[in-house]
Amino acid sequence: MQQPSVLDQNILGLCKQMNSLRTKLSPKEFIHAFVLSSDSDVAYLRRHWAQPKGISSTIELVDVIGHEIKKTEVGRAAWAKFVQKGAIKILQSEEPPQGNYPLGGFHSAMLVEPHFFLLEEKEAHSRHLVEHMPFLSHTLMGMLNVDDSSIPVEAEEPIGTADCIPELDTSNIPEDIADIVYEDLNNGHEGHCLNTICAMIAFACNCRNNGLQLHNAVRLFACGITEQVQEYMNYIGLSASRSTVIAALKTLAKVQAENLKRIMANTTTLIPPTICIDNIDMEERVHQSSIGNRTHTFRGTWGYLHLPDEKLIATLDPLELTLGAYHKAIEKVNSMELTPIMFLPTPAEEQFEIQVWKSQIAKVFRKQIAMSIDETLTIPTLPPDVELISHLAPEIHMLKLMDASDNSAKGICQVFQ
Image 1 (cartoon, rainbow, N blue to C red):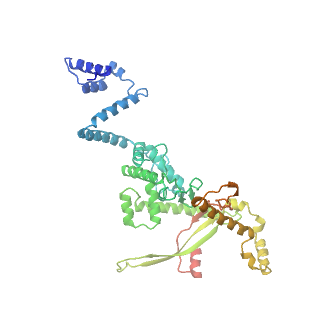
Image 2: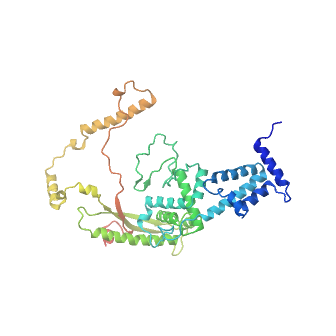
Image 3: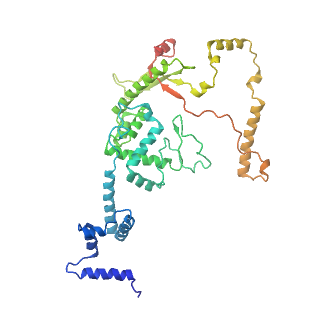
Protein backbone atom coordinates (compact mmCIF):
# COMPACT_ATOMS: atom_id res chain seq x y z
CA MET A 1 0.00 0.00 0.00
CA GLN A 2 1.38 3.36 -1.01
CA GLN A 3 2.17 5.73 1.81
CA PRO A 4 0.14 9.01 1.79
CA SER A 5 2.03 12.10 0.83
CA VAL A 6 2.96 14.80 3.28
CA LEU A 7 0.15 17.00 2.00
CA ASP A 8 -2.41 14.22 2.45
CA GLN A 9 -1.12 13.56 5.95
CA ASN A 10 -1.52 17.24 6.83
CA ILE A 11 -5.05 17.27 5.43
CA LEU A 12 -6.03 14.18 7.42
CA GLY A 13 -4.48 15.66 10.56
CA LEU A 14 -6.45 18.89 10.18
CA CYS A 15 -9.70 17.01 9.59
CA LYS A 16 -9.14 14.86 12.72
CA GLN A 17 -8.34 17.95 14.74
CA MET A 18 -11.53 19.75 13.59
CA ASN A 19 -13.54 16.63 14.34
CA SER A 20 -12.08 16.37 17.85
CA LEU A 21 -13.28 19.85 18.87
CA ARG A 22 -16.30 20.31 21.13
CA THR A 23 -18.13 21.89 18.19
CA LYS A 24 -17.22 19.48 15.48
CA LEU A 25 -16.53 21.02 12.06
CA SER A 26 -16.68 19.24 8.71
CA PRO A 27 -14.44 20.53 5.85
CA LYS A 28 -17.47 22.12 4.12
CA GLU A 29 -18.61 23.80 7.30
CA PHE A 30 -15.10 25.12 7.87
CA ILE A 31 -14.82 26.60 4.35
CA HIS A 32 -18.33 28.07 4.59
CA ALA A 33 -17.59 29.72 7.94
CA PHE A 34 -14.16 30.89 6.78
CA VAL A 35 -15.60 32.68 3.75
CA LEU A 36 -18.58 34.26 5.53
CA SER A 37 -16.90 35.15 8.82
CA SER A 38 -17.02 38.86 9.66
CA ASP A 39 -14.16 38.62 12.16
CA SER A 40 -11.38 41.02 11.23
CA ASP A 41 -8.62 38.46 11.73
CA VAL A 42 -10.36 35.87 9.56
CA ALA A 43 -11.16 38.49 6.91
CA TYR A 44 -7.49 39.46 6.88
CA LEU A 45 -6.53 35.87 5.99
CA ARG A 46 -8.73 35.91 2.88
CA ARG A 47 -7.87 39.48 1.85
CA HIS A 48 -6.26 38.40 -1.46
CA TRP A 49 -9.02 36.02 -2.61
CA ALA A 50 -10.79 38.59 -4.79
CA GLN A 51 -7.73 40.73 -5.60
CA PRO A 52 -5.47 40.51 -8.67
CA LYS A 53 -2.83 38.75 -6.55
CA GLY A 54 -5.04 35.82 -5.59
CA ILE A 55 -8.00 35.77 -7.96
CA SER A 56 -6.43 33.08 -10.19
CA SER A 57 -6.03 30.61 -7.35
CA THR A 58 -9.56 31.40 -6.12
CA ILE A 59 -11.01 30.57 -9.53
CA GLU A 60 -8.95 27.37 -9.59
CA LEU A 61 -10.46 26.42 -6.23
CA VAL A 62 -13.99 26.96 -7.54
CA ASP A 63 -13.15 24.94 -10.67
CA VAL A 64 -11.81 22.06 -8.58
CA ILE A 65 -14.96 22.05 -6.46
CA GLY A 66 -17.09 22.05 -9.60
CA HIS A 67 -15.08 19.17 -11.03
CA GLU A 68 -15.74 17.15 -7.89
CA ILE A 69 -19.46 17.96 -7.95
CA LYS A 70 -19.85 16.94 -11.60
CA LYS A 71 -18.71 13.37 -10.99
CA THR A 72 -22.32 12.24 -10.41
CA GLU A 73 -25.54 12.81 -12.34
CA VAL A 74 -27.12 14.63 -9.39
CA GLY A 75 -24.04 16.79 -9.04
CA ARG A 76 -23.98 17.71 -12.73
CA ALA A 77 -27.63 18.78 -12.61
CA ALA A 78 -27.06 20.84 -9.47
CA TRP A 79 -23.91 22.45 -10.90
CA ALA A 80 -25.67 23.31 -14.16
CA LYS A 81 -28.53 24.91 -12.21
CA PHE A 82 -26.03 26.86 -10.09
CA VAL A 83 -24.12 28.15 -13.15
CA GLN A 84 -27.38 28.97 -14.95
CA LYS A 85 -28.60 31.02 -12.00
CA GLY A 86 -25.34 32.98 -11.93
CA ALA A 87 -25.40 33.50 -15.70
CA ILE A 88 -28.96 34.87 -15.54
CA LYS A 89 -27.91 37.41 -12.90
CA ILE A 90 -24.98 38.55 -15.05
CA LEU A 91 -27.14 38.84 -18.17
CA GLN A 92 -29.77 40.83 -16.31
CA SER A 93 -27.11 43.26 -15.14
CA GLU A 94 -25.87 43.89 -18.70
CA GLU A 95 -27.86 46.52 -20.56
CA PRO A 96 -26.95 49.12 -23.19
CA PRO A 97 -27.08 52.73 -21.97
CA GLN A 98 -30.55 54.25 -21.98
CA GLY A 99 -31.45 57.48 -23.71
CA ASN A 100 -31.40 58.89 -27.22
CA TYR A 101 -28.66 58.00 -29.69
CA PRO A 102 -25.64 58.47 -29.60
CA LEU A 103 -25.62 58.51 -25.78
CA GLY A 104 -28.16 55.69 -25.63
CA GLY A 105 -29.62 53.01 -27.87
CA PHE A 106 -32.94 54.67 -28.78
CA HIS A 107 -33.43 55.87 -32.36
CA SER A 108 -36.49 58.09 -32.71
CA ALA A 109 -38.54 57.77 -35.89
CA MET A 110 -39.12 61.53 -35.71
CA LEU A 111 -35.39 62.34 -35.71
CA VAL A 112 -33.92 59.64 -37.97
CA GLU A 113 -31.61 60.83 -40.75
CA PRO A 114 -30.42 59.16 -43.97
CA HIS A 115 -26.90 58.47 -42.65
CA PHE A 116 -28.48 56.11 -40.08
CA PHE A 117 -28.81 53.50 -42.85
CA LEU A 118 -25.15 53.60 -43.86
CA LEU A 119 -23.02 50.50 -43.35
CA GLU A 120 -20.69 52.34 -40.97
CA GLU A 121 -23.59 53.37 -38.73
CA LYS A 122 -24.93 49.82 -38.66
CA GLU A 123 -21.53 48.41 -37.70
CA ALA A 124 -21.15 51.08 -34.99
CA HIS A 125 -24.53 50.14 -33.54
CA SER A 126 -23.59 46.45 -33.53
CA ARG A 127 -20.30 47.18 -31.77
CA HIS A 128 -22.15 49.37 -29.26
CA LEU A 129 -24.48 46.50 -28.36
CA VAL A 130 -21.74 43.88 -28.13
CA GLU A 131 -19.52 46.08 -25.97
CA HIS A 132 -22.30 46.57 -23.41
CA MET A 133 -23.37 42.91 -23.47
CA PRO A 134 -19.97 41.18 -23.20
CA PHE A 135 -21.12 38.09 -21.29
CA LEU A 136 -23.84 37.24 -23.82
CA SER A 137 -21.66 38.02 -26.84
CA HIS A 138 -18.69 35.97 -25.59
CA THR A 139 -20.99 33.08 -24.72
CA LEU A 140 -22.40 33.12 -28.22
CA MET A 141 -18.94 33.40 -29.71
CA GLY A 142 -17.89 30.32 -27.76
CA MET A 143 -20.90 28.40 -29.06
CA LEU A 144 -20.26 29.51 -32.64
CA ASN A 145 -16.52 28.75 -32.38
CA VAL A 146 -15.58 32.32 -33.27
CA ASP A 147 -12.19 33.69 -32.25
CA ASP A 148 -12.66 35.73 -29.07
CA SER A 149 -9.86 38.12 -30.04
CA SER A 150 -12.01 40.01 -32.54
CA ILE A 151 -15.70 40.69 -32.81
CA PRO A 152 -16.84 40.17 -36.42
CA VAL A 153 -19.12 42.64 -38.18
CA GLU A 154 -22.35 41.46 -39.67
CA ALA A 155 -22.73 40.81 -43.38
CA GLU A 156 -25.55 42.29 -45.39
CA GLU A 157 -25.95 39.18 -47.50
CA PRO A 158 -25.09 35.54 -46.71
CA ILE A 159 -22.11 34.71 -48.89
CA GLY A 160 -21.50 31.07 -48.04
CA THR A 161 -18.38 29.32 -46.90
CA ALA A 162 -14.80 29.55 -48.04
CA ASP A 163 -15.01 26.00 -49.44
CA CYS A 164 -17.38 27.19 -52.16
CA ILE A 165 -14.82 29.67 -53.54
CA PRO A 166 -11.38 28.22 -52.80
CA GLU A 167 -9.35 30.73 -54.82
CA LEU A 168 -11.21 33.91 -53.89
CA ASP A 169 -8.99 36.62 -52.42
CA THR A 170 -11.05 39.24 -50.56
CA SER A 171 -8.11 41.33 -49.33
CA ASN A 172 -8.39 43.83 -52.20
CA ILE A 173 -12.18 43.93 -52.46
CA PRO A 174 -13.71 47.25 -51.36
CA GLU A 175 -15.93 47.21 -48.30
CA ASP A 176 -19.01 48.70 -49.91
CA ILE A 177 -19.99 49.13 -53.55
CA ALA A 178 -23.47 50.58 -54.01
CA ASP A 179 -24.67 48.89 -50.79
CA ILE A 180 -23.23 45.51 -51.83
CA VAL A 181 -21.26 44.45 -48.79
CA TYR A 182 -18.23 42.18 -48.85
CA GLU A 183 -17.26 40.39 -45.65
CA ASP A 184 -14.52 38.05 -44.59
CA LEU A 185 -15.90 34.62 -45.47
CA ASN A 186 -14.47 33.12 -42.27
CA ASN A 187 -16.62 35.06 -39.82
CA GLY A 188 -19.33 36.89 -41.79
CA HIS A 189 -22.12 34.39 -41.05
CA GLU A 190 -21.17 33.92 -37.39
CA GLY A 191 -20.86 37.66 -36.86
CA HIS A 192 -24.28 38.22 -38.40
CA CYS A 193 -25.85 35.65 -36.05
CA LEU A 194 -24.08 37.06 -32.99
CA ASN A 195 -25.08 40.68 -33.63
CA THR A 196 -28.65 39.76 -34.51
CA ILE A 197 -29.16 37.71 -31.35
CA CYS A 198 -27.71 40.48 -29.16
CA ALA A 199 -29.99 43.03 -30.82
CA MET A 200 -33.06 40.80 -30.40
CA ILE A 201 -32.34 40.23 -26.69
CA ALA A 202 -31.72 43.93 -26.07
CA PHE A 203 -34.95 44.86 -27.87
CA ALA A 204 -36.93 42.22 -25.94
CA CYS A 205 -35.63 43.55 -22.61
CA ASN A 206 -36.15 47.19 -23.58
CA CYS A 207 -37.96 48.14 -26.78
CA ARG A 208 -36.06 51.44 -26.87
CA ASN A 209 -32.95 49.55 -28.01
CA ASN A 210 -34.34 49.64 -31.54
CA GLY A 211 -31.41 50.34 -33.88
CA LEU A 212 -31.47 47.06 -35.82
CA GLN A 213 -35.27 46.88 -35.68
CA LEU A 214 -35.75 50.34 -37.20
CA HIS A 215 -33.13 49.62 -39.87
CA ASN A 216 -34.79 46.32 -40.82
CA ALA A 217 -38.31 47.76 -40.72
CA VAL A 218 -37.58 50.52 -43.23
CA ARG A 219 -35.75 48.17 -45.60
CA LEU A 220 -38.47 45.51 -45.42
CA PHE A 221 -41.22 48.07 -45.93
CA ALA A 222 -39.41 49.45 -48.99
CA CYS A 223 -39.20 45.91 -50.40
CA GLY A 224 -42.98 45.52 -50.19
CA ILE A 225 -43.30 43.24 -47.17
CA THR A 226 -46.90 42.55 -46.14
CA GLU A 227 -48.31 43.97 -42.94
CA GLN A 228 -48.86 40.49 -41.46
CA VAL A 229 -45.23 39.47 -42.00
CA GLN A 230 -43.96 42.75 -40.55
CA GLU A 231 -46.14 42.29 -37.48
CA TYR A 232 -44.60 38.85 -37.01
CA MET A 233 -41.08 40.25 -37.44
CA ASN A 234 -41.91 42.87 -34.83
CA TYR A 235 -43.28 40.17 -32.51
CA ILE A 236 -40.03 38.18 -32.58
CA GLY A 237 -37.88 41.30 -32.19
CA LEU A 238 -36.43 41.66 -35.68
CA SER A 239 -38.39 44.67 -36.90
CA ALA A 240 -40.13 47.79 -35.64
CA SER A 241 -43.88 48.25 -35.99
CA ARG A 242 -45.59 49.48 -39.15
CA SER A 243 -46.56 52.80 -37.55
CA THR A 244 -42.93 53.44 -36.61
CA VAL A 245 -41.85 52.77 -40.19
CA ILE A 246 -44.36 55.21 -41.64
CA ALA A 247 -43.28 57.90 -39.15
CA ALA A 248 -39.62 57.31 -40.05
CA LEU A 249 -40.34 57.52 -43.78
CA LYS A 250 -42.18 60.82 -43.31
CA THR A 251 -39.17 62.20 -41.45
CA LEU A 252 -36.78 60.97 -44.15
CA ALA A 253 -39.00 62.49 -46.85
CA LYS A 254 -38.81 65.91 -45.19
CA VAL A 255 -35.02 65.66 -44.93
CA GLN A 256 -34.75 64.59 -48.56
CA ALA A 257 -36.98 67.45 -49.72
CA GLU A 258 -34.69 69.96 -48.03
CA ASN A 259 -31.65 68.31 -49.61
CA LEU A 260 -33.21 68.54 -53.09
CA LYS A 261 -33.99 72.22 -52.61
CA ARG A 262 -30.42 72.90 -51.50
CA ILE A 263 -28.92 70.97 -54.41
CA MET A 264 -31.06 72.57 -57.11
CA ALA A 265 -30.50 76.06 -55.66
CA ASN A 266 -26.76 75.77 -56.29
CA THR A 267 -25.97 77.51 -59.59
CA THR A 268 -22.18 77.60 -59.28
CA THR A 269 -21.53 74.01 -60.36
CA LEU A 270 -19.90 73.41 -63.73
CA ILE A 271 -22.27 70.53 -64.54
CA PRO A 272 -25.73 70.65 -62.93
CA PRO A 273 -27.33 67.50 -61.48
CA THR A 274 -28.88 65.06 -63.93
CA ILE A 275 -32.54 64.15 -63.49
CA CYS A 276 -33.23 60.48 -64.25
CA ILE A 277 -36.88 59.38 -64.39
CA ASP A 278 -38.75 56.30 -65.53
CA ASN A 279 -42.34 55.08 -65.53
CA ILE A 280 -43.53 52.37 -63.18
CA ASP A 281 -46.78 50.39 -63.02
CA MET A 282 -47.72 48.75 -59.72
CA GLU A 283 -50.73 46.49 -59.43
CA GLU A 284 -52.46 46.00 -56.10
CA ARG A 285 -54.15 42.67 -56.69
CA VAL A 286 -57.21 41.68 -54.66
CA HIS A 287 -57.92 37.94 -54.69
CA GLN A 288 -61.52 38.24 -53.49
CA SER A 289 -63.09 41.21 -55.24
CA SER A 290 -66.04 43.00 -53.70
CA ILE A 291 -67.69 46.39 -53.91
CA GLY A 292 -65.03 49.00 -53.23
CA ASN A 293 -62.38 46.32 -52.97
CA ARG A 294 -60.97 45.62 -56.41
CA THR A 295 -57.64 45.23 -58.13
CA HIS A 296 -56.06 48.62 -58.72
CA THR A 297 -53.15 49.61 -60.97
CA PHE A 298 -51.00 52.56 -59.98
CA ARG A 299 -49.27 54.35 -62.85
CA GLY A 300 -46.52 56.64 -61.72
CA THR A 301 -43.02 57.89 -62.28
CA TRP A 302 -39.99 57.41 -60.09
CA GLY A 303 -36.58 59.00 -60.44
CA TYR A 304 -33.52 60.50 -58.81
CA LEU A 305 -30.97 63.29 -59.07
CA HIS A 306 -27.47 62.22 -60.03
CA LEU A 307 -24.70 64.56 -58.89
CA PRO A 308 -21.54 64.45 -61.03
CA ASP A 309 -18.30 63.34 -59.41
CA GLU A 310 -16.22 66.26 -58.16
CA LYS A 311 -12.96 64.53 -59.12
CA LEU A 312 -14.25 64.04 -62.66
CA ILE A 313 -15.30 67.68 -62.96
CA ALA A 314 -11.84 68.79 -61.82
CA THR A 315 -10.31 67.04 -64.86
CA LEU A 316 -12.56 68.81 -67.38
CA ASP A 317 -11.91 72.03 -69.27
CA PRO A 318 -14.69 74.57 -68.55
CA LEU A 319 -14.22 76.16 -71.98
CA GLU A 320 -15.22 72.89 -73.66
CA LEU A 321 -18.50 72.69 -71.75
CA THR A 322 -20.07 75.89 -73.03
CA LEU A 323 -22.97 76.18 -75.45
CA GLY A 324 -20.68 77.61 -78.11
CA ALA A 325 -18.34 74.61 -77.87
CA TYR A 326 -21.34 72.34 -78.26
CA HIS A 327 -22.50 74.14 -81.43
CA LYS A 328 -19.01 73.89 -82.95
CA ALA A 329 -18.91 70.17 -82.26
CA ILE A 330 -22.33 69.68 -83.84
CA GLU A 331 -21.28 71.62 -86.96
CA LYS A 332 -18.37 69.20 -87.52
CA VAL A 333 -20.79 66.27 -87.73
CA ASN A 334 -21.99 67.32 -91.21
CA SER A 335 -18.48 67.07 -92.67
CA MET A 336 -17.43 64.01 -90.68
CA GLU A 337 -16.59 60.96 -92.78
CA LEU A 338 -17.57 57.65 -91.20
CA THR A 339 -15.54 54.54 -92.07
CA PRO A 340 -15.90 50.95 -90.81
CA ILE A 341 -12.46 51.05 -89.25
CA MET A 342 -13.76 53.50 -86.64
CA PHE A 343 -15.86 50.71 -85.16
CA LEU A 344 -13.12 48.07 -85.15
CA PRO A 345 -10.60 47.51 -82.34
CA THR A 346 -7.17 49.00 -82.73
CA PRO A 347 -4.03 46.78 -82.99
CA ALA A 348 -3.18 47.62 -79.37
CA GLU A 349 -6.63 46.54 -78.23
CA GLU A 350 -6.36 43.30 -80.22
CA GLN A 351 -2.97 42.59 -78.67
CA PHE A 352 -4.43 43.11 -75.21
CA GLU A 353 -7.22 40.62 -75.93
CA ILE A 354 -4.66 38.07 -77.15
CA GLN A 355 -2.67 38.45 -73.92
CA VAL A 356 -5.81 37.87 -71.88
CA TRP A 357 -6.55 34.62 -73.73
CA LYS A 358 -2.94 33.45 -73.41
CA SER A 359 -2.88 34.15 -69.66
CA GLN A 360 -6.04 32.10 -69.14
CA ILE A 361 -4.69 29.18 -71.16
CA ALA A 362 -1.33 29.35 -69.38
CA LYS A 363 -3.05 29.32 -66.00
CA VAL A 364 -4.97 26.14 -66.88
CA PHE A 365 -1.81 24.45 -68.24
CA ARG A 366 0.19 25.36 -65.14
CA LYS A 367 -2.48 24.15 -62.76
CA GLN A 368 -3.64 20.99 -64.53
CA ILE A 369 -0.73 19.75 -66.67
CA ALA A 370 2.83 20.77 -65.79
CA MET A 371 5.10 23.50 -64.52
CA SER A 372 7.54 25.35 -66.73
CA ILE A 373 11.23 24.58 -66.36
CA ASP A 374 12.38 28.10 -67.20
CA GLU A 375 10.26 30.72 -65.47
CA THR A 376 11.72 33.51 -67.62
CA LEU A 377 10.15 32.03 -70.75
CA THR A 378 6.71 31.31 -69.33
CA ILE A 379 3.58 33.18 -70.33
CA PRO A 380 2.18 35.24 -67.46
CA THR A 381 -0.85 33.65 -65.80
CA LEU A 382 -2.27 37.06 -64.92
CA PRO A 383 -3.78 39.29 -67.60
CA PRO A 384 -2.22 42.73 -68.19
CA ASP A 385 -3.50 45.67 -66.20
CA VAL A 386 -6.32 47.73 -67.62
CA GLU A 387 -7.59 51.16 -66.81
CA LEU A 388 -9.39 50.90 -63.48
CA ILE A 389 -12.97 52.10 -63.50
CA SER A 390 -13.99 53.95 -60.37
CA HIS A 391 -15.91 51.69 -58.01
CA LEU A 392 -17.11 54.49 -55.76
CA ALA A 393 -20.88 54.62 -55.31
CA PRO A 394 -22.44 57.59 -57.15
CA GLU A 395 -24.14 60.33 -55.17
CA ILE A 396 -27.82 60.12 -55.95
CA HIS A 397 -30.89 61.61 -54.29
CA MET A 398 -34.23 59.90 -54.80
CA LEU A 399 -37.30 61.82 -55.90
CA LYS A 400 -40.79 61.30 -54.55
CA LEU A 401 -42.97 58.74 -56.37
CA MET A 402 -45.20 60.81 -58.66
CA ASP A 403 -48.51 60.25 -60.40
CA ALA A 404 -48.49 60.15 -64.19
CA SER A 405 -51.31 59.19 -66.51
CA ASP A 406 -49.18 57.57 -69.22
CA ASN A 407 -46.07 58.01 -71.38
CA SER A 408 -47.55 60.84 -73.40
CA ALA A 409 -46.59 64.49 -73.32
CA LYS A 410 -49.45 65.06 -70.91
CA GLY A 411 -48.00 62.51 -68.52
CA ILE A 412 -44.51 64.04 -68.54
CA CYS A 413 -46.02 67.48 -67.99
CA GLN A 414 -47.75 66.13 -64.91
CA VAL A 415 -44.40 64.91 -63.62
CA PHE A 416 -42.63 68.24 -64.16
CA GLN A 417 -45.49 70.13 -62.54
